[in-house]
Image 1 (tube, helix red, strand yellow):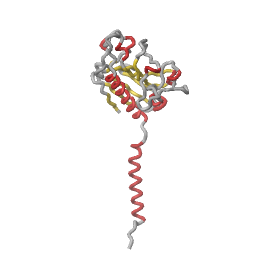
Image 2 (image 1 turned 120 degrees about the horizontal axis):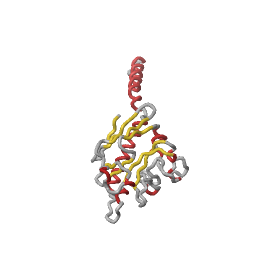
Image 3 (image 1 turned 30 degrees about the vertical axis):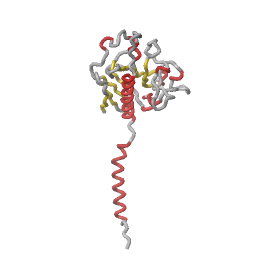
Image 4 (image 1 turned 60 degrees about the vertical axis):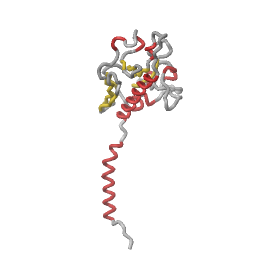
Length: 213
């Protein structure tokens, strides 16, 4: 004689599955604010990595330190007036602090892309242009709905060969560590959307980053 589930047992199983789904599904919903913070944290670490493996020291160049790898957050026309960020090294010698296309880091996952969400007056760096060579996900406003960013230290961070974070605009510096620009306190970057906020903290000396929800 074959055994089979009774109607009551089937109903009970369906109810249990429904309860589990109700508990699990809300936790799997996309949290764009958290995704943005995790991405920024990862890209800050990548900037630090570039600085450590690509030390710009050159005894024959008095401005070598201005070429250190850095990450800058900005909101301008070429980012569609949205908060975005760019990773670059000011290597061309003019040390303007505003990167040209070939000074911006190449996306290690796609060598046809530059690591910017829109920056400078160059056509290819304008996120609204069809020839945009940057990465839309680095435009935090357009990709994640970030409406504002607060900075406790600066909108621009660079790193030395030891990975120590520096908070100044290197283009205006007159020495490798001008005006004690090494970060000596925790620096916070707070991302905001219309309803909530999340903070990325950069520690002095180590440049270690962590997220506060």
